[in-house]
Image (cartoon, rainbow, N blue to C red; front, side, top):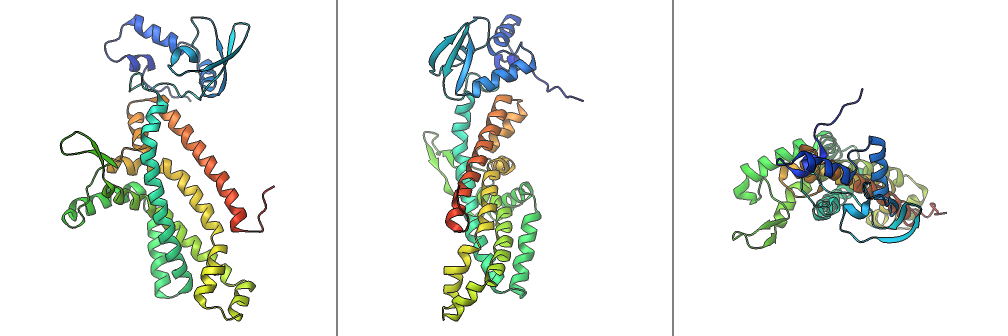
Length: 333
């Protein structure tokens, strides 16, 4: 059974004071009067760098729907072949604004938040994972395991609400942190944007809790396996200190599963930051997705999903290349 989403894209783009003639003209201009299958092909054509466009004045084409320059290559009958950048259409809610501009304005904030969160998870996760492995089955190890399991099981949106209330409201006079706030904010005179790094602390910690718990678990288990290898016993037999054995031989070889987890978590953070950004008022791509869902701004939603998917694939390819450096047994063909 199919569900039809409410809302007319043409009416959403025109606002409340539209006429029937204006609605008809917008539908014809953007191809909204075509069947769903045809509209999908139009969208794929807009995304493709090499695309084909009809010369018929009544048909929707990329060249009339935007202000970007495009290189026309040659004509095939009634069709023009065009070389261009991928076109993500225009926002329904923000009339006349390109989806690429909307994403370009918000994704840097999300990237800063995701990088900060993953750095916290990597540094603390490796440290606590090594400590947990070295003190296996002691109270230190059990405490770290309990806390990491708890951190892994708590949803990010609940942690965000809890941290915002506790550190931004209850303990505000001690932490000087706010419940909400973004990286760039207007100054007290409303004249220029200023960077507020303190607003990054709470959302970065909250977003990093779950990957931190995963890194601790993986680092502990991987390091315990490595410490039982023959080359570790050989290193100890040569008279190396335990610190040198851990730092120079064990940790690097135990990082493979950790790197795999980090790559997946970093890519997913760009989409998983949705609730964290919305709760903390962080003006990133996640908050923009929530706003787009509330206003049925489908082009922004589709564009954001495509960008996140491309980033996810790119990061996974980059991680595969890193494997060759971390593990000499892995060879790139």
